[in-house]
Image 1 (cartoon, rainbow, N blue to C red):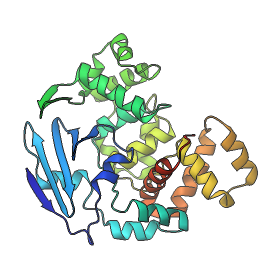
Image 2 (image 1 turned 30 degrees about the vertical axis):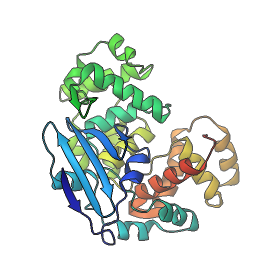
Image 3 (image 1 turned 90 degrees about the horizontal axis):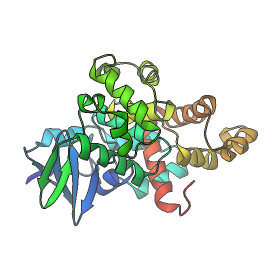
Length: 300
């Protein structure tokens, strides 16, 4: 087990808030330890005050990997002071101080958020586990079985029936098509990281099954685009509830009544988030999202 000594005043970090806020689907807490499957290995992790304890299996992981994955290189005190623009976000920041955006693998993030369309977090976790069980590799560690996330080739060569057995429903055809495009090199994920936010988003929107919200999630959680502001049913309710004075009252009333957003409505809400909170709007989104989900008994 390796230990990282954290300087919490300079580098605030809270492992429970970060892994429990709904941004990532492959971690679970067993006893005091979190277990996740990252880049083909099981990672076991616990935070004790200013110490971060971790172990990788079958091969170890180093401190550099952990720092990169949990974005410990982000200057969180500066980020939080920049997004702290009003009392609503201020309350969320105080409650979940130390929550960080995770730097996920772009391929896994793409498929995970395609599965997340119109699905609850338990359903998303179930779909990803089913895909990993059927098409990934099994790792047994600490009396538990874990499964690595499937490579593009494994999903590209799958049949539609096999994908549907993973409970993907209407998402199966889109996942299959995107897997084929990534596998044959027709769509390359990595260059998107170097593009501007708008360019990278337009590239992602060219994929079947990737709408504005899925694209923004991929940009925020795997492509270092911290200005991305994904809007799902929770964020629509949060933004139009807490920040309604920034919108036309008729827009607020009409949009809250509807089941889904048109691209224009999505853009209006997401653009407000990016303008209001600035270049780290994605952090504001995650703090507000986690705060509302933690303290609201009624899902939208």
